Length: 186
Image (cartoon, rainbow, N blue to C red; front, side, top):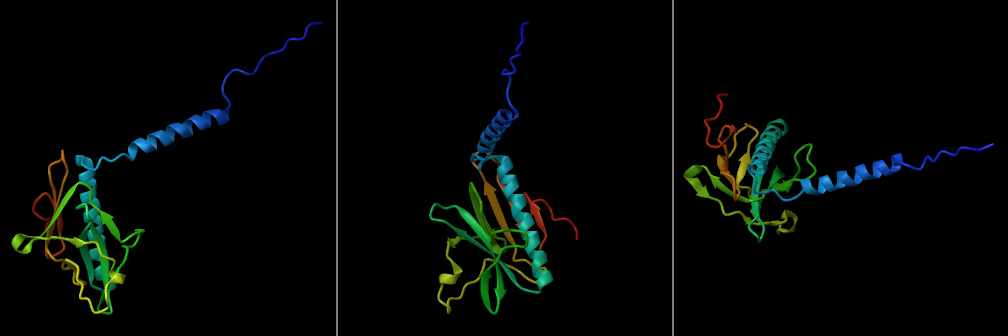
């Protein structure tokens, strides 16, 4: 009597298929993390993130009854960054906003900060670590966020190589708007 053997070796196993899916996912993730810093969408996202953080910090100042500050700084390469400060016992401490892991963030592309009063262009200082400063050093952030919801007026311009500049403006009442549009009524 003849025995019939069926070969089951064709096709892929589930482990092999999952390995291919993981490799494709890693390749896609690597391509999505490429530097698109000068794209219009990236500039818009940075402006929106900054505006959201500013709004959150303003609310924290009101809820805490403390004075918060916004310090702009630059690296040697000209990259502009900012950090959130909180005044405690007449000293400024670097603090992260609630829900954020770090107190510092960076703008990619070209960013310029102007104080609204008199359109004075800020020249952000080179990044310093506050804890390394001598105790008698007077240090103050460029923008104050008061518990009364007042904010030092300023304008932030973000521009990239192919993108039109995005302008984020904050007025004395803490209202924030984009591209020089009129602020919304309270």
